[in-house]
Amino acid sequence: MKYTKKALLMLGILLAMLSITGCKAKRYSDLGGMSISMSEDMRSVKNKNATWAMTNGYINAVGIKTDSDDLEKTGLEVNSLADYVAAYIKGNDIPDNVTVNTEDNFIYFTYNNKESRLTYVNFFYDNGDYYWLVSFACPMGNTYDLYRKDIFKWADSVKFN
Image (cartoon, rainbow, N blue to C red; front, side, top):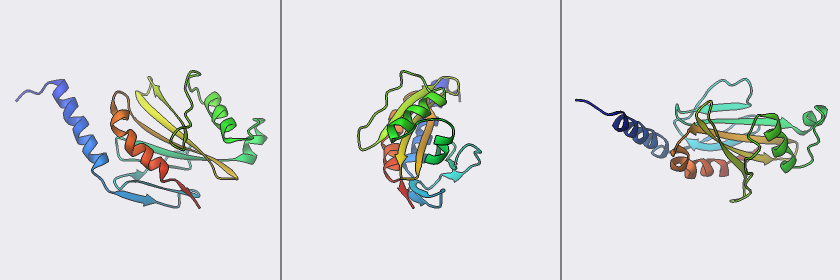
């Protein structure tokens, strides 16, 4: 039986959709001072640049905690969450034309990285002493549209200890 590339791709997308949206939510705690609810098939992975990192093999999620005092020591003037977002964009090779959104009670931006072929959705939080980035990455294409609802639900579940 022969399968076309398009049929195999569609089957892969369908299986991935079932693995993400078909899973129950699980609360992940003890993540460096925060917790988040995501699908129960997420597993911890090592990422030396992140406070925590998880994946289910299709969606990647990382949390990065930045101490406000450490930012001052680098010479960056960060007095607000908006300043932190701007500094993050400038310091991480994010395209200048990215639009920072403040809808749905979130401060976030989305961009496509053509080199890694991933779509990133970066959410920013301020819990007093720390600024947080919680980032989700998924394969480019219409994948983000398929998972947008889940990603925003997960971002909305973020709580700080």
